[in-house]
Image 1 (cartoon, helix red, strand yellow):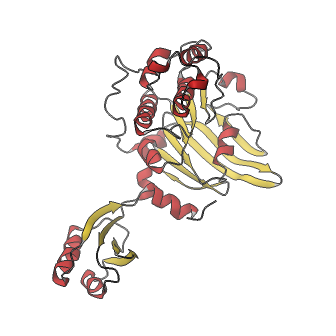
Image 2 (tube, one colour):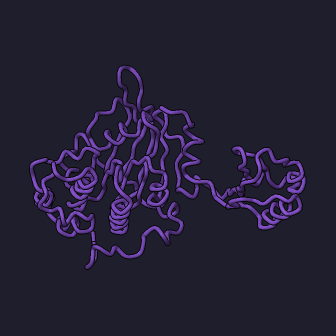
Image 3 (cartoon, one colour):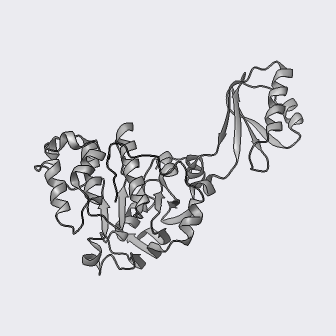
Length: 334
Protein backbone atom coordinates (compact mmCIF):
# COMPACT_ATOMS: atom_id res chain seq x y z
CA UNK A 1 0.00 0.00 0.00
CA UNK A 2 1.43 3.36 -1.01
CA UNK A 3 0.71 5.73 1.83
CA UNK A 4 2.45 8.59 0.04
CA UNK A 5 5.23 10.89 1.10
CA UNK A 6 3.01 12.72 3.57
CA UNK A 7 0.61 10.27 5.23
CA UNK A 8 -1.03 13.09 7.21
CA UNK A 9 -2.51 14.37 3.97
CA UNK A 10 -4.15 11.36 2.30
CA UNK A 11 -5.09 13.35 -0.82
CA UNK A 12 -8.41 13.41 -2.64
CA UNK A 13 -11.19 11.29 -1.25
CA UNK A 14 -11.10 8.07 -3.34
CA UNK A 15 -14.90 7.93 -3.08
CA UNK A 16 -15.68 11.44 -4.22
CA UNK A 17 -15.28 10.65 -7.94
CA UNK A 18 -16.33 7.02 -7.97
CA UNK A 19 -18.25 6.16 -11.14
CA UNK A 20 -20.01 2.90 -11.98
CA UNK A 21 -18.47 1.16 -8.99
CA UNK A 22 -21.00 -1.66 -9.22
CA UNK A 23 -20.06 -2.27 -12.85
CA UNK A 24 -16.38 -2.48 -11.95
CA UNK A 25 -17.08 -4.78 -9.03
CA UNK A 26 -19.18 -7.05 -11.24
CA UNK A 27 -16.28 -7.88 -13.55
CA UNK A 28 -13.77 -8.53 -10.79
CA UNK A 29 -12.98 -12.09 -9.70
CA UNK A 30 -14.31 -13.06 -6.29
CA UNK A 31 -11.93 -12.78 -3.36
CA UNK A 32 -14.54 -14.24 -1.00
CA UNK A 33 -17.21 -16.78 -1.96
CA UNK A 34 -19.81 -18.10 0.49
CA UNK A 35 -22.36 -20.62 -0.78
CA UNK A 36 -25.22 -22.18 1.18
CA UNK A 37 -23.61 -21.37 4.53
CA UNK A 38 -25.39 -22.80 7.56
CA UNK A 39 -24.41 -22.35 11.20
CA UNK A 40 -26.61 -23.58 14.04
CA UNK A 41 -26.56 -22.91 17.76
CA UNK A 42 -28.77 -25.03 19.97
CA UNK A 43 -30.58 -26.40 16.97
CA UNK A 44 -31.42 -22.91 15.64
CA UNK A 45 -29.96 -21.78 12.32
CA UNK A 46 -28.27 -18.45 13.00
CA UNK A 47 -26.99 -18.50 9.42
CA UNK A 48 -29.47 -20.14 7.06
CA UNK A 49 -28.17 -21.12 3.60
CA UNK A 50 -26.49 -17.77 3.06
CA UNK A 51 -24.75 -16.85 -0.21
CA UNK A 52 -22.26 -13.99 -0.42
CA UNK A 53 -19.61 -12.90 -2.91
CA UNK A 54 -17.04 -10.15 -2.29
CA UNK A 55 -15.31 -8.97 -5.50
CA UNK A 56 -11.54 -8.63 -5.42
CA UNK A 57 -10.23 -5.12 -4.88
CA UNK A 58 -13.61 -3.76 -3.77
CA UNK A 59 -15.11 -2.69 -0.45
CA UNK A 60 -18.04 -4.88 0.61
CA UNK A 61 -20.11 -3.77 3.61
CA UNK A 62 -22.12 -6.44 5.40
CA UNK A 63 -25.03 -4.87 7.27
CA UNK A 64 -27.69 -6.31 9.52
CA UNK A 65 -29.45 -5.79 12.86
CA UNK A 66 -28.13 -7.45 16.00
CA UNK A 67 -28.66 -11.20 15.80
CA UNK A 68 -29.04 -11.21 12.01
CA UNK A 69 -26.13 -13.62 11.53
CA UNK A 70 -23.60 -11.26 9.98
CA UNK A 71 -20.93 -11.66 12.68
CA UNK A 72 -21.22 -15.46 12.63
CA UNK A 73 -20.91 -15.38 8.83
CA UNK A 74 -17.74 -13.30 9.00
CA UNK A 75 -16.29 -15.54 11.72
CA UNK A 76 -16.82 -18.55 9.46
CA UNK A 77 -14.99 -16.68 6.69
CA UNK A 78 -12.13 -15.90 9.07
CA UNK A 79 -11.83 -19.56 10.08
CA UNK A 80 -12.89 -18.82 13.65
CA UNK A 81 -16.01 -21.01 13.41
CA UNK A 82 -16.74 -24.23 11.54
CA UNK A 83 -19.84 -24.14 9.31
CA UNK A 84 -22.46 -26.85 9.74
CA UNK A 85 -23.11 -26.84 5.99
CA UNK A 86 -22.14 -24.96 2.86
CA UNK A 87 -18.77 -23.77 1.63
CA UNK A 88 -16.50 -20.80 2.21
CA UNK A 89 -13.59 -19.87 -0.05
CA UNK A 90 -11.23 -17.05 0.84
CA UNK A 91 -8.82 -16.19 -1.97
CA UNK A 92 -9.78 -19.58 -3.39
CA UNK A 93 -8.82 -21.47 -0.21
CA UNK A 94 -10.68 -23.04 2.71
CA UNK A 95 -10.22 -20.83 5.81
CA UNK A 96 -10.11 -23.90 8.07
CA UNK A 97 -7.95 -26.42 6.23
CA UNK A 98 -5.78 -23.78 4.53
CA UNK A 99 -5.40 -21.50 7.52
CA UNK A 100 -1.58 -21.53 7.42
CA UNK A 101 -1.52 -20.51 3.76
CA UNK A 102 -4.10 -17.75 4.29
CA UNK A 103 -2.60 -16.28 7.45
CA UNK A 104 -0.03 -14.04 5.69
CA UNK A 105 -2.55 -13.01 3.02
CA UNK A 106 -5.53 -12.05 5.16
CA UNK A 107 -5.87 -9.35 7.80
CA UNK A 108 -8.46 -9.56 10.57
CA UNK A 109 -9.58 -6.74 12.83
CA UNK A 110 -11.93 -7.56 15.67
CA UNK A 111 -13.75 -5.14 17.97
CA UNK A 112 -11.78 -6.67 20.83
CA UNK A 113 -8.38 -6.52 19.20
CA UNK A 114 -6.75 -8.98 21.64
CA UNK A 115 -3.76 -6.65 21.99
CA UNK A 116 -1.20 -7.28 24.75
CA UNK A 117 -2.07 -4.68 27.35
CA UNK A 118 1.42 -4.36 28.80
CA UNK A 119 3.19 -3.61 25.51
CA UNK A 120 3.66 -0.16 24.00
CA UNK A 121 1.67 0.74 20.88
CA UNK A 122 4.69 0.96 18.58
CA UNK A 123 6.12 -2.29 19.96
CA UNK A 124 2.88 -4.12 19.17
CA UNK A 125 2.82 -2.88 15.59
CA UNK A 126 6.52 -3.58 15.00
CA UNK A 127 6.07 -7.09 16.39
CA UNK A 128 3.17 -7.81 14.02
CA UNK A 129 5.09 -6.26 11.11
CA UNK A 130 8.08 -8.52 11.80
CA UNK A 131 5.90 -11.57 11.10
CA UNK A 132 5.42 -10.54 7.46
CA UNK A 133 7.76 -10.53 4.50
CA UNK A 134 6.84 -7.06 3.16
CA UNK A 135 5.15 -5.12 5.92
CA UNK A 136 4.03 -1.54 5.68
CA UNK A 137 6.17 0.93 7.61
CA UNK A 138 4.73 0.86 11.16
CA UNK A 139 5.64 4.49 11.71
CA UNK A 140 3.61 5.63 8.71
CA UNK A 141 0.58 3.68 9.87
CA UNK A 142 0.83 5.13 13.37
CA UNK A 143 1.09 8.60 11.87
CA UNK A 144 -1.82 8.14 9.48
CA UNK A 145 -4.08 6.90 12.28
CA UNK A 146 -3.05 9.62 14.71
CA UNK A 147 -1.20 7.22 17.00
CA UNK A 148 2.34 8.55 16.63
CA UNK A 149 2.09 10.73 19.79
CA UNK A 150 1.07 7.58 21.70
CA UNK A 151 3.72 5.26 20.25
CA UNK A 152 5.33 4.71 23.68
CA UNK A 153 2.05 4.43 25.56
CA UNK A 154 1.13 0.97 26.79
CA UNK A 155 -2.01 -0.55 25.33
CA UNK A 156 -3.79 -0.55 28.69
CA UNK A 157 -3.36 3.22 28.90
CA UNK A 158 -4.69 3.91 25.42
CA UNK A 159 -8.25 5.11 25.11
CA UNK A 160 -10.82 2.78 23.59
CA UNK A 161 -10.67 4.66 20.29
CA UNK A 162 -6.87 4.52 20.24
CA UNK A 163 -6.90 0.77 20.85
CA UNK A 164 -9.44 0.45 18.05
CA UNK A 165 -7.12 2.26 15.64
CA UNK A 166 -4.13 0.21 16.78
CA UNK A 167 -6.10 -2.99 16.09
CA UNK A 168 -6.81 -1.69 12.60
CA UNK A 169 -3.15 -0.91 12.03
CA UNK A 170 -2.20 -4.42 13.17
CA UNK A 171 -4.71 -5.91 10.72
CA UNK A 172 -3.25 -4.13 7.69
CA UNK A 173 0.46 -3.77 8.49
CA UNK A 174 1.27 -7.09 6.76
CA UNK A 175 -0.06 -5.87 3.36
CA UNK A 176 -2.98 -8.33 3.24
CA UNK A 177 -4.75 -9.15 -0.01
CA UNK A 178 -8.04 -9.25 1.90
CA UNK A 179 -8.90 -7.65 5.21
CA UNK A 180 -11.91 -8.18 7.48
CA UNK A 181 -12.88 -5.12 9.51
CA UNK A 182 -15.44 -5.56 12.29
CA UNK A 183 -17.00 -2.20 13.22
CA UNK A 184 -13.76 -0.33 12.40
CA UNK A 185 -15.01 3.07 13.62
CA UNK A 186 -17.12 1.97 16.60
CA UNK A 187 -16.72 4.53 19.37
CA UNK A 188 -14.42 6.83 17.39
CA UNK A 189 -14.72 10.61 17.28
CA UNK A 190 -15.26 12.31 13.87
CA UNK A 191 -11.56 13.04 13.32
CA UNK A 192 -10.60 9.42 13.96
CA UNK A 193 -13.44 8.15 11.76
CA UNK A 194 -12.14 10.20 8.85
CA UNK A 195 -8.62 8.86 9.42
CA UNK A 196 -9.96 5.30 9.28
CA UNK A 197 -11.97 6.12 6.15
CA UNK A 198 -8.82 7.50 4.53
CA UNK A 199 -6.95 4.27 5.32
CA UNK A 200 -9.76 2.18 3.83
CA UNK A 201 -9.50 4.39 0.76
CA UNK A 202 -5.77 3.66 0.50
CA UNK A 203 -6.41 -0.07 0.83
CA UNK A 204 -9.02 -0.02 -1.92
CA UNK A 205 -6.82 2.07 -4.21
CA UNK A 206 -4.05 -0.52 -3.77
CA UNK A 207 -6.36 -3.36 -4.81
CA UNK A 208 -6.95 -4.79 -1.34
CA UNK A 209 -10.33 -6.46 -0.85
CA UNK A 210 -12.09 -5.02 2.20
CA UNK A 211 -15.02 -6.77 3.91
CA UNK A 212 -16.42 -4.71 6.75
CA UNK A 213 -19.36 -4.85 9.14
CA UNK A 214 -20.81 -1.64 10.47
CA UNK A 215 -23.96 -0.29 12.08
CA UNK A 216 -23.27 3.15 10.59
CA UNK A 217 -25.29 3.50 7.41
CA UNK A 218 -23.52 6.69 6.33
CA UNK A 219 -20.20 4.87 6.64
CA UNK A 220 -21.38 2.01 4.45
CA UNK A 221 -22.85 4.41 1.91
CA UNK A 222 -19.60 6.36 1.78
CA UNK A 223 -17.11 3.49 1.69
CA UNK A 224 -18.73 0.50 0.03
CA UNK A 225 -18.71 -0.56 -3.60
CA UNK A 226 -21.20 -3.25 -2.61
CA UNK A 227 -23.62 -3.51 0.29
CA UNK A 228 -24.99 -6.84 1.53
CA UNK A 229 -27.92 -6.69 3.96
CA UNK A 230 -28.35 -9.78 6.15
CA UNK A 231 -31.42 -10.57 8.25
CA UNK A 232 -32.66 -13.82 9.71
CA UNK A 233 -29.46 -15.54 8.62
CA UNK A 234 -30.04 -14.79 4.94
CA UNK A 235 -29.09 -12.10 2.44
CA UNK A 236 -32.19 -9.95 1.92
CA UNK A 237 -30.64 -7.37 -0.43
CA UNK A 238 -27.35 -6.59 -2.10
CA UNK A 239 -25.95 -4.16 -4.63
CA UNK A 240 -24.15 -0.86 -4.92
CA UNK A 241 -25.44 1.79 -2.49
CA UNK A 242 -26.93 3.80 -5.35
CA UNK A 243 -28.70 0.71 -6.66
CA UNK A 244 -30.29 0.05 -3.27
CA UNK A 245 -31.33 3.64 -2.57
CA UNK A 246 -32.56 4.32 -6.11
CA UNK A 247 -33.29 7.74 -7.55
CA UNK A 248 -36.51 8.45 -5.66
CA UNK A 249 -36.55 11.78 -3.84
CA UNK A 250 -38.85 13.51 -1.41
CA UNK A 251 -39.80 17.15 -0.95
CA UNK A 252 -40.49 17.92 2.69
CA UNK A 253 -41.65 21.05 4.45
CA UNK A 254 -43.20 22.28 7.66
CA UNK A 255 -46.62 23.91 7.92
CA UNK A 256 -49.48 24.12 10.44
CA UNK A 257 -50.47 20.67 11.67
CA UNK A 258 -53.62 19.25 10.13
CA UNK A 259 -53.28 21.30 6.97
CA UNK A 260 -56.00 20.53 4.40
CA UNK A 261 -54.12 18.87 1.57
CA UNK A 262 -57.03 18.32 -0.81
CA UNK A 263 -56.17 21.34 -2.94
CA UNK A 264 -52.51 20.33 -3.18
CA UNK A 265 -53.43 16.78 -4.18
CA UNK A 266 -55.68 18.18 -6.89
CA UNK A 267 -52.91 20.46 -8.14
CA UNK A 268 -50.46 17.55 -8.28
CA UNK A 269 -52.98 15.63 -10.43
CA UNK A 270 -51.70 12.22 -9.39
CA UNK A 271 -48.06 12.97 -10.27
CA UNK A 272 -47.07 12.81 -6.61
CA UNK A 273 -48.44 11.72 -3.27
CA UNK A 274 -48.51 14.12 -0.33
CA UNK A 275 -49.01 13.20 3.31
CA UNK A 276 -48.37 14.48 6.80
CA UNK A 277 -45.49 12.37 8.13
CA UNK A 278 -45.64 13.91 11.62
CA UNK A 279 -47.67 16.75 13.10
CA UNK A 280 -46.65 19.81 11.10
CA UNK A 281 -44.29 17.94 8.73
CA UNK A 282 -45.33 17.12 5.16
CA UNK A 283 -43.75 15.05 2.40
CA UNK A 284 -44.33 15.02 -1.36
CA UNK A 285 -43.14 11.92 -3.25
CA UNK A 286 -43.44 11.12 -6.98
CA UNK A 287 -45.91 8.29 -7.53
CA UNK A 288 -43.60 6.65 -10.09
CA UNK A 289 -40.79 6.33 -7.51
CA UNK A 290 -38.48 8.53 -9.56
CA UNK A 291 -36.84 11.89 -9.06
CA UNK A 292 -38.88 15.01 -8.40
CA UNK A 293 -39.59 17.05 -11.51
CA UNK A 294 -38.79 20.81 -11.21
CA UNK A 295 -42.33 21.55 -12.40
CA UNK A 296 -43.71 19.43 -9.55
CA UNK A 297 -41.70 21.45 -7.03
CA UNK A 298 -43.04 24.64 -8.64
CA UNK A 299 -46.58 23.28 -8.31
CA UNK A 300 -46.09 22.72 -4.58
CA UNK A 301 -44.62 26.17 -3.93
CA UNK A 302 -47.30 27.85 -6.09
CA UNK A 303 -50.04 26.09 -4.14
CA UNK A 304 -48.46 27.17 -0.86
CA UNK A 305 -48.40 30.78 -2.11
CA UNK A 306 -52.03 30.67 -3.21
CA UNK A 307 -53.10 29.05 0.08
CA UNK A 308 -51.16 31.53 2.19
CA UNK A 309 -48.94 28.76 3.59
CA UNK A 310 -45.32 29.59 4.34
CA UNK A 311 -43.40 26.28 3.91
CA UNK A 312 -40.88 26.00 6.71
CA UNK A 313 -37.62 24.12 6.13
CA UNK A 314 -38.40 23.27 2.51
CA UNK A 315 -35.93 20.51 1.66
CA UNK A 316 -35.25 18.01 -1.12
CA UNK A 317 -33.81 14.67 -0.01
CA UNK A 318 -33.14 11.32 -1.59
CA UNK A 319 -33.79 7.99 0.05
CA UNK A 320 -30.84 6.97 2.20
CA UNK A 321 -29.29 3.60 2.88
CA UNK A 322 -30.72 3.84 6.39
CA UNK A 323 -34.21 4.15 4.89
CA UNK A 324 -33.59 1.02 2.82
CA UNK A 325 -32.17 -0.85 5.81
CA UNK A 326 -35.19 -0.04 8.00
CA UNK A 327 -37.61 -0.98 5.23
CA UNK A 328 -35.87 -4.36 4.84
CA UNK A 329 -35.28 -5.26 8.47
CA UNK A 330 -38.08 -3.40 10.26
CA UNK A 331 -38.06 -0.72 12.93
CA UNK A 332 -38.64 -2.86 16.03
CA UNK A 333 -35.88 -3.04 18.61
CA UNK A 334 -34.05 -6.38 18.95
